[in-house]
Length: 106
Image (tube, rainbow, N blue to C red; front, side, top):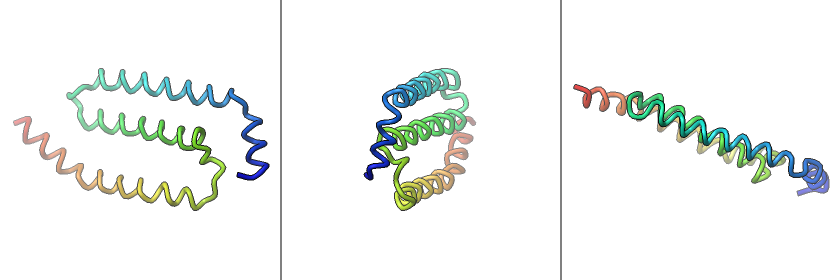
């Protein structure tokens, strides 16, 4: 971490961290409401919504609390590559999950 990064970190103070904490809290409450609202009736919507919110929370934690916002491009490549692979796997298994759910409904 360079001196400029340390100065930028000290410049933000705790206000930025409280804002991120507030955003994480709001997202957690929305996740709970989302799960209660959709339940098992709309499983795909439930899972996609919760996954999107969890991914957003993970991104906020990684960028601000783990200080990855100041890192070079290589760290983003190391983080994004596995996420893309997981997304490809999820999209690959999604048709099977939909098929299984449609068979259970019969």
